[in-house]
Length: 299
Length: 223
Image 1 (cartoon, rainbow over the protein chains, first blue to last red):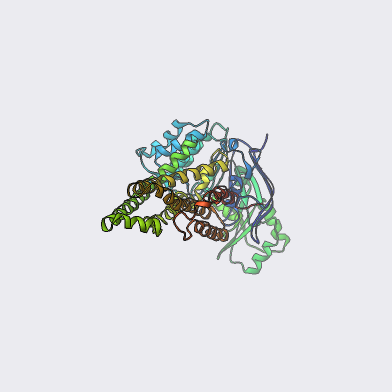
Image 2 (cartoon, rainbow over the protein chains, first blue to last red; image 1 turned 135 degrees about the vertical axis):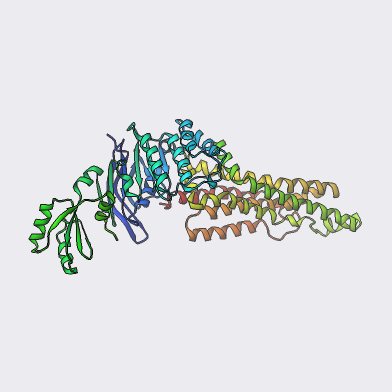
């Protein structure tokens, strides 16, 4: 199966500041992928490169088989873009913006657009600039869906949306994607939204370190183990040395949380190997957001 | 698809264009009134002598109007596109980027030209009404470089607004000032007549030059 997105040996920097070097991953068709990472690791840079608005320093980035910075018009018709902030031409009304986009896309589904925007219960002459963030997001989503793209690139779809509009956005997206014919590649800072929506997660860390796995696999295998008690800085440093068994450590006043893909026994054995006489270690349940913070760190 | 882009630009700039048109119309009417006033306050042969022999210009209020009109048209057309880089919305459309940029420029130049129509029409009418027909050629050879300055100002301002790099943006401002200044040098009425054809060249070259900042806006890196 030909990947929808292929990234090979991708490197990019802004002046002397290296964002990533030798980044490699691919996206299979028919699934929903989330690119997750802390602020400043290069998620938006990668999305800009995929969208074709930034040419990388070196490496290859192919979208639907074409170089991302040289996608021909007929391939661009198969890609739906959501720009951060739900960017749109705000001087137009609900009707005008649909009339503007429709002639460009041969598979344009006008009914689907109005099915979504009519949920807002606004007159079709309502200008987009007079809408709230959430209302605007619904219009932009309607435009993307009406286009009937094979690939949807959503850059931080959740920004500015309250819980209600985020839920509406996700519900409409899930309904739209249920035939399994479309691929989604998104970024978001609302980690909990990924549950029940996303198939695969790609963690991007500073410097370009990348980890790709299914969301289910990540949730099942990434664990938090808590050591109760007060531990000094030297102890924490000793524990950090047993990488890669421990992915991350969070030291608190009365306990330390150890995050790992290994089992409790393996972690306990690793601690014994460094002669750590530590208190009881127990596995702590985590939400996906806890796991994300555990994986990437708080700062 | 071209029709869609036309309507998009129309919805974006229509009210501003109406205001610009009204301002141009107001200046044209002012020139008409001041020209008529010349003939009220003095004998016609004295006015003719001053204008045709002494080369005084009764319509110099028009001189910088096309330049300011061109700059304002470019600003109202491209500033909304540069706000949060909204031009990306159009650049992603399934249409070649150079074609898209040229259509935008063509629409802008057409809108600019439309606002100058009252200026051109009223200038022609008052010259024909108050002066001999031979004066029409001189008036047109005097005013045409000013109108071209407006076109160059529009294209130069477009170069400035589309350019994402600040240093190159500043450089493009110098190009805007220099290119526009070429058409607005002090000259006797009709002084540009012999080189009017050559003055088309910078105007045409600047239409194509807009592609480079648009390309840099698209990819953020050339080469």
